[in-house]
Length: 216
Picture 1 (spheres, rainbow, N blue to C red):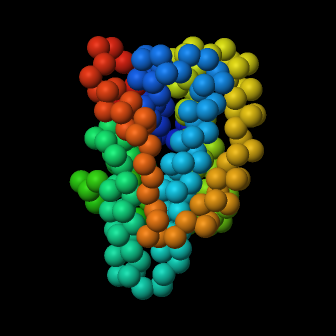
Picture 2: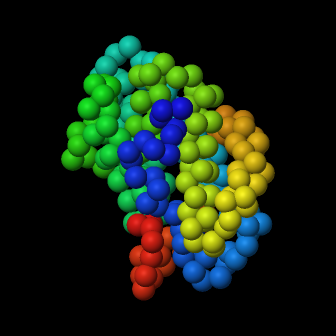
């Protein structure tokens, strides 16, 4: 619960994952469209990229040989960062990763990355979960819940949605997290990746908006 809490000081609240531009340009106007946006990212993006990498990170943390463990974690870090289709989506991942590096260091949680490195939040989340003895299903569920809660919180400000509508969306979408985790288990390493052109366009356009509330 600590690791997946929205109050974890990693700055997840500052990123909309393309949602802000999608709302600004009129792609999304109502709660059902927010649900569809989140649902597509979950099933066509996170379950074929972030979640399979998270599983492999936690497996890598079980390697006894520290050299092999570090090499594998760096390999997975490079893989997930290569999957980020835009500058902003990469920034979302690495900015939160940088913050989690600082937090883990302050909590004396062992992790192999330097603060100057570009590190994926997904990778660090898996390392932290492993160091805290959290099992993979719980970690994956917590990771996706944290992502979903941030998406709905962004939509609440941007659409805007009422608090009741936001809670209804969370109730509607929460059962799909377990479906995404099950689908992710079938993804082979060579198949990790996703292509969401609408998200990539929204992310690319976001940095040129005249005004914005979110960093990406």
